[in-house]
Amino acid sequence: PIDGTTPSGPRLTAASEDYHPTVVIKSLMSILRDPSLSAHHSMVTQAVVFIFKSLGMRCAPFLNKIVPNLLYTVRVCEHGLRESIIQELAILAPTVKHHLRPFLGPIFDVITDYWSEYLEQCVSVTENVALHLREDFKLYLPRVLPLLLSSLAAFAASSSSSSKSTAVATSGLTSSPTSLSSSLPSSSSATLTSKPSVPSVSYTHLRAHETD
Image (cartoon, rainbow, N blue to C red; front, side, top):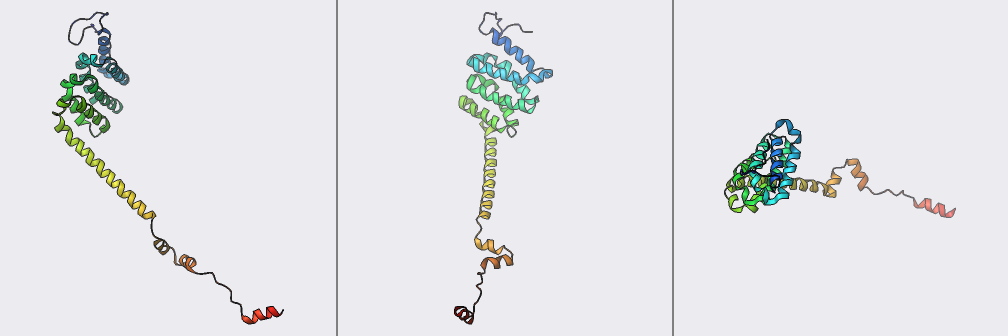
């Protein structure tokens, strides 16, 4: 049941500034933990993002209720929702900054486990943590750096292969005329190289024609 208490314990009244966010977040997390309501989980995560953006730093006291539930759900949900949740983790760092520190370990567990499958979203989380929690990020750099280098190497290899394929295709289009003519059948070559024949007319025939 929802008792109207804050994450830290003291009871709130309906007139309190944090009362309504507390009630809403408890309700949303209750839905998110219920597998039978999985059809609504996507809307729950969207509502959580809206709360983050609306409250800003004021949502920091609710992180211990929100982040563990997101990190649990990201491992058991379907593909589309997992992608959305990882992207939402990227929004947390610039929103709550150092308040995210206690959750960085589990967050980077998710990042390393899903790096290959959700590269764009995982890079976004890593980038935001590096920008907004620089000192804390240094602890996790040894875990992330090999993943970054591996992705860069794969991208470079893919780009190199694509460039070679393009070069081969281009060289085929710029073949010399000699090569082209040599590939034609002999009869076609003869037709292309032979001069048109001019019928021969004898001198006697021309004189007879002038006399006439």
